[in-house]
Length: 210
Image 1 (cartoon, rainbow, N blue to C red):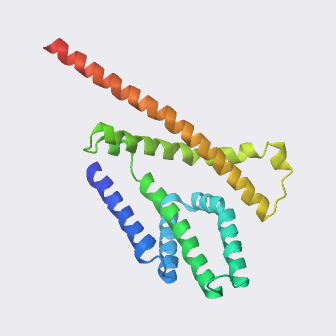
Image 2: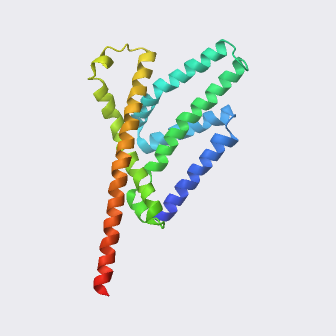
Image 3: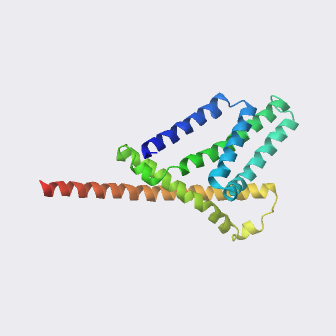
């Protein structure tokens, strides 16, 4: 398949997923669970069992934290009642996991070469290039940050319960956010500099020919 069609098809599929599961079927718990199962099965085929388990392990503390919060609201019968919070927790938790996994699948299917061959002006194309580069950087940085966190004395003294794991995951995510912002700034400047250099070189070549 041509790069143009591949990117266009990926964007259409992603848009359709967002429209259906985030708006049309948002309150349908059965569809949300089915969507999660389908995305999980495809993730096994696309990423493999090991990488999928690693991704789910990253999300596990947050999912357990959400389940604990919604379960507490349901037990205390706060607001709309127990049935409301159980339904709300199932739909939102399933949607969170399925959306994150599906977005990773879509982004991973698009190569840098496909983006470069996409018929879009370079002023818009550079954002797609930057997004793909950041995704590649972030994919391999989370596990490294988790390893670095283990060498911090305060983290070594942290209790290994649910609250401690959630706190550790939040700390790693904040570090990943800072890392992403720095990488986005540096790589964005590098892309702009490369575009400017290529443009100036092209202008000089035309001037010499004329």
